[in-house]
Length: 410
Image (tube, rainbow, N blue to C red; front, top):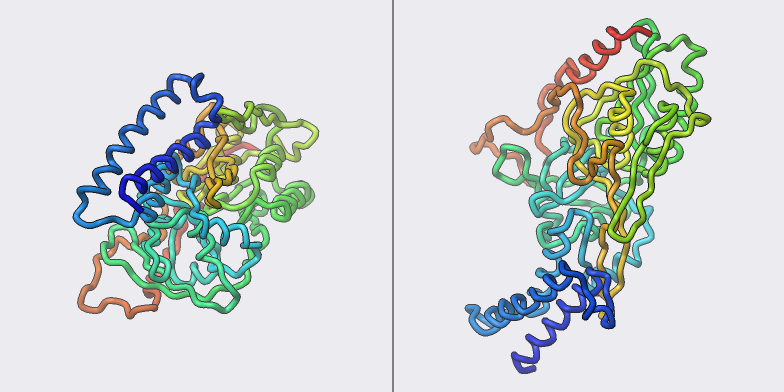
């Protein structure tokens, strides 16, 4: 195929993607708004760049690889959840029925690579000492920089008993570590319930905000008065998975009135989720919520609702920053776009995806973050997780939260 033909085909591909992205069809191009006109003017720039790549690069490039990289970068420049899937990727994505074995990590993309958002307690990832903020440089031999988030999540799954090998870069450690884990059927522990201060404080820790776990929280809140509890400590640290509708329901248990969250996009009419007094269970008990950098999505929605309505004190670290609604757009060549079409906002109007939630009482996590100096003379053996360091006896975030609750009048 002549070079000029290849260039024209590539330009046409870019135009097609931009057309889908901007939400216009061929009949509407002439009436495009000013931002859209600006985007279409950039096609000339793209064409010039492609021409130079095709004619002046040190060797003849693989146009398919160049195109895929450009389109992936275009989508990921928007947010971590937006992805471009090649025809091969999209075929695998559609064929995935879920329910496969996992290692117990929630992931997103940061700095171009897959990043651990949170780790499920007791999971293979937890036993391998993976922590919030660890960078997954590679899955097997595949560099996560070259993978969309959708494909990263797909590669982390597999058959029960199968091996997953990842290269991990930990905070303040430059050398990647190879860690092997055995995939197991996904299990999330039930809601943890603990009594403090002579049973006057009810501590609740859901691992995920799905229907079952929110139901468990509901039952425990309803039963709390029977056992003499007067205050509530809700631990949302590392709560990143679940459903936004269930998160809204959980927030409503503790709110009698006020806005819980909002959802809005360029083509998604603004929705405002308001607390229903009839669904509130305990809207007056003194309340403290724990959050950390592993709190994301549903966990952030609850935390933001309780903070902005001045219903609870938040203790811990700034949360991860997730909270968008996606839609899949299929392309004529069999590829697809997964595009964020709306973002959740806190009652004060802050987009969770962009800003996260900052607690009023900041307390750093005392979880090992890999800050110790590497011992280059005795590196860990390949495929072996680093040895756990002695656990910290005191959970400083929990201690601070309990101190706050103790000072509150019941």
